[in-house]
Every structure is written in C-alpha cells, then in structure tokens.
Length: 216
Image: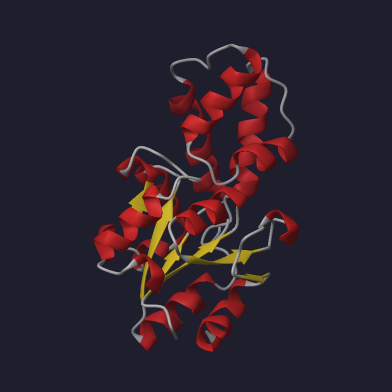
C-alpha cells in the first residue's frame, strides 16, 4: 500500500446517517418557511458543515435562520440517531483489516464532535475511534470544500498529505481532499459517480475498500 494514513469521512461512509439527517434537515427548513426536499438537501448540504446551511439560506432568501436553529436541529438528529442509526455495511471489516495490517486511520468530519460521539456510541464505532483519531470542522473553523480539515488531520497524525488517502461520499469532500493534495476514493453508495468528479477511484461497497487499497 502506498498510503500511510486512511482518512475516513464519517456521515455516509462509516455511519448510515445521511438519510436520517437530510430528511430532518429538509423538514425543518420547510417548517421555517424555506421549502426544501430531501433530494435538495442531499444536493446542497451533504458533507457540509452547518455554516453552509446558514449561508445558503441567507444567500437565497435574505433571511437568517433562527439563533437556536443548530441546537434544535441537532436535538432532532441525535434523537433519531439513538433510535435508528446503524453503521455502514462493511465498516467494521475495513477497520479490522487496517488494524491487522498496521495501517493508520482516522476520521475527518464536517459534523460536530458531539454528533460524531453520539453516532459512534450508538453504532459501536467508538471502540475503533478514540478521541485522538477524530477530527471535526469545529477544530479548524472552515468546513469542506476547504482543505483545512484534512490538512489538520494529517498534521495531527504525523503524515504528509501526499501519503494520505481520503474516503469520501460527497462532492464537497472530494473537492476538499483534492485541494489538500490527497488522493480520494469516492464512495458511490448514495452519490452518483458523476457527482464525485476528481476522485482518484470510485467504489460502491465499503467491503471493496481493503482490496482497492491493497492494489494501490
């Protein structure tokens, strides 16, 4: 393997959270007078930090979302996670293989540290991701598509960007990884391949990842 570090996105890659969170986001925006479908939420906000939601709504409507928007939205999301969230199929197998092969890994997510912790406790992924392996856009201030988060994760893990590969399922994440000078494997389970332009490779089942990395 030519990579020294595998950087995972979290939502939609390790945990099957995108359908839950985008259903709730579309419903809440619509409730507040900004009609949004589930498909539009995926298109516009999948892989993004919360500031992108605020910025996009303001650009389109000239209106600010309520001050308690994030708090209320996250409360709804966390409740849904506790009821329904599952790990992505193949996530544990991939992590077991990387560990057995001695390959370093971490995650870099647009989600908050609290969102990550809630999801990992529910799915059992907290066994694999101690705090030293978890990086959030909260840590850098600018979320994807800026490269800051991935560069921060690589620096903290002690690996040069060119020795990293990112596993991403969103166009914003692919853009961020490319801007960071990293290879990126685009996960097409929820995102059409044509939307992941710029990905180094594409794959549709997480269980394919270890074989693809071995071929690198």
